[in-house]
Image (cartoon, rainbow, N blue to C red; front, side):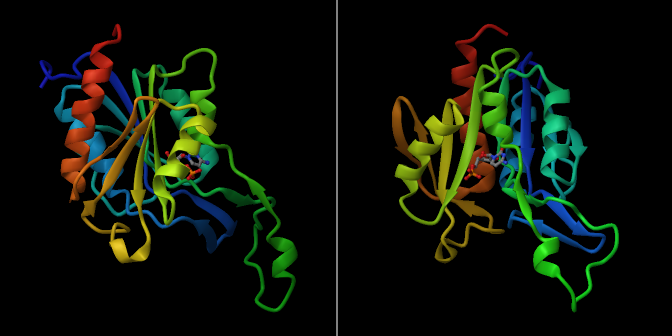
Length: 223
Ligand code: C5P
C-alpha cells in the first residue's frame, strides 16, 4: 500500500545465483534458489516501497508489484544495480559467483583437450562492496548476506567491516540445516549495534521481519 512503512522509498534487491559462462554449454554458479531474495522484494513492495529486483537465473515468478531485471553474470548484475540507482535501501541477497573464466570459449571445450588451461579464473566484482564503498550515490542503508558453514557470527562480523555495509544477515547453510533450497531460515542480524538471533522462521517471515526492521532504520533517514 502507498501508505506503508516504506512508501516513497526505493529498495534495490539482488537475488539468485549468477551464471559465469565457460563455453556455450557450461557455466560456473553458486547454489541459490533465490527464494529469500524474492521474498524480501515482495515484502518491501507490500510495505509500499518501489522495488527493483535484479535477479540471476532462478525458477521463480516475478513478485507482484516488483520491477524485475533479469541478468546472467556478476558483471551484468553490477551494471543493472548501478543503472537502478539511486536507492534508499540496498539488500544484496544474491549468491554471486566469486570467479569467472578469463576467456569464455565461443566453442564447446572438448573433453579430450586442454580444459585446465581454458579454465583460468579471474575474480568477479564484489557488488555489495562496490556499492557500499561508493563515495557518491551509496544507498544510505546497505544490507548484505553471509551464508556460512562455520563460525557464522565471527565471519559475519568480519564481512560487515570488509564489505562496508550497515547490516549483515548471517545464516548457517551447513548441509544439515536444509536452508539451501528450503523454505526455512535461521538468521542472525549482525551490525555495529551487536548481534540479534532470530528463531527459525519461514523465508517469508524472515523477509517480513527484515523489512519491518529496515523500515524502522529507514524512517530515521530523510527520503
Ligand atoms: O563474500 P560473500 O560472497 O560471502 O559475501 C556475501 C554478500 O556479498 C552477499 O550479500 C552477496 O550478495 C554479496 N556479494 C556481492 N558480489 C559478489 C560477492 C558477494 O554482492 N561478487
